[in-house]
Length: 380
Image (cartoon, rainbow, N blue to C red; front, side, top):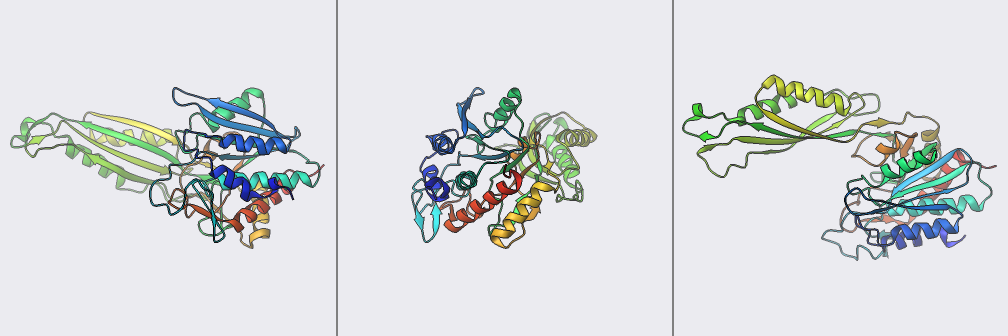
């Protein structure tokens, strides 16, 4: 078995590239070198939308369909404080690989490449295998996966199915896959009044009571009771702020922020309309800014999820739960183009100090990915 078929050295090589968003520091080169050695046609793609230039990669082996795509990212969050080892050292201690990105998600990228190395070594493929690797997942996500998908569409290249290697398992490899994700809406609300003396409230227009009434109406009732594959949508207040440094002034403005994680019963547009109706019913002068970072999406259970369940169970003995919990990922962009699932390593230490994964899980995930390739790509 060649070194490319062993995920550990490749995961260590990736961790040793401190590719904190938006930096690449050669992480994409590590992937290109490995895939080029396996016969992939690699496209090193860079995009910049008024900010730092972001490196991405699209690589493909074969030209037949189906085109099975693995999507992932080589950028990582900053290491932060509290590490007991070098966050970019890639050390193996007591059977665990330590380093920023070990779980999220350089480890999974290494596992998929190792799985491909084993898969292609066993004979000709029936379809194609591709990888979409971005350096902009942990950041604004404007010059990464979205731009590569646009580039593919312009070329007329189709992804038939996609697996995203996010760390989906809470505690043990094989526990959970993601078949969808909730949408996320962020709102910034400013309510305006007229400043005045606290002793003469009738001469002022206090915006605070209106803001509180608006927030009460927004939060007094559940948005829904959930749907077949999603938990109930949730509105969470994130800030309420007046910024008044004194006690005898009625402020001219009061502000609040809130986030809605929403299921497939809503869209960003429908929620914005509901929010505005609610605010208008209270009345007064206000300004509302809405940002939807992702709509909800769902890949209905079918051939892809069944294949992943079978391979995961064969390797781990566990049957993965079909889940839509958690935050957002780049799968929200890919879902516009093809069926997409997420499955990767154990998530318990991602973004934490001393992030790590079990070396045994790297081998286990590689076996699962290889089994999935056998089922979904097949042989000639």
